[in-house]
Image (cartoon, rainbow, N blue to C red):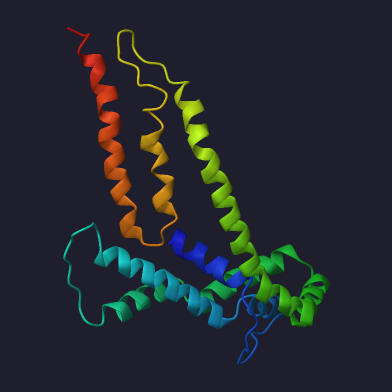
Length: 210
């Protein structure tokens, strides 16, 4: 539920402008509807549903799982029911009313309806995605060094075989890579490889114990 609401929030808070059939009553609800139109909420639900479906249909590499022919529609319905549009709209309207005065809300509504406000809702998501991509690449480039420096802080029992500085980082370094892939099924593969790599380090102290 937390993941679903977070993704829907990200998909709708800065959503492109869309025509609304009828604005809800109240300034705060009007602002909430302008900031997150129903079309954007629906797109967010679709995105989550596809991820859920892919994860269920491919629990692990090589698995053969069969679901009903209308499985996609059922997944979509479950995700949508977990956070209906009206519920999400009411949540935002409540927080807007608690955060801003009526005069401030009126100004924000005016801005959201202005050409600049519409451009902001249209351009900001793509801009934020570009920044997120750059941040990911920046952090990934520094991660091997971070893991190497932090692994050197580990203390081992006397007599235990200490892994070399080059042997320890590769296991955790593989974990961030699958996170870039949108498919949930690809994440477990590196995790299985990392587990055996760390097993010898834990088993070594048992030899001197004789």
